[in-house]
Length: 125
Picture 1 (cartoon, rainbow, N blue to C red):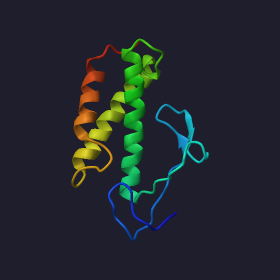
Picture 2: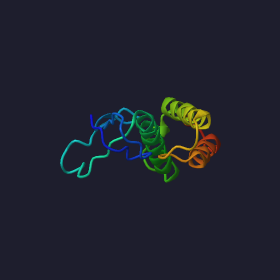
Picture 3: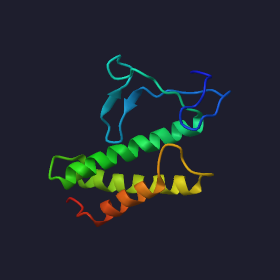
């Protein structure tokens, strides 16, 4: 934990967190502690940490949607993952709309656009 300045919203004085190990939205492991992949660590306050997780899920879903649209192998080709991603995008929009002010890490219109594109895509069987 660090007590500098949040690199999401700029708040200072409170505890800051860094999420470096975990799994992405589709359950794949990631490790940003490795020196080659984390040259400049970023620290976030509690609220921005939550938004960073939302941003990561959005980015993972968008990447898989782009693969699906390009006819490449995608986690979204699995019906259950497709549905789970659709639900997660709705959750992200709900959280963004319920929040005070705008997220410093995630744009609501970008999430809505991806949600619309996913809703108009043919769901895999």
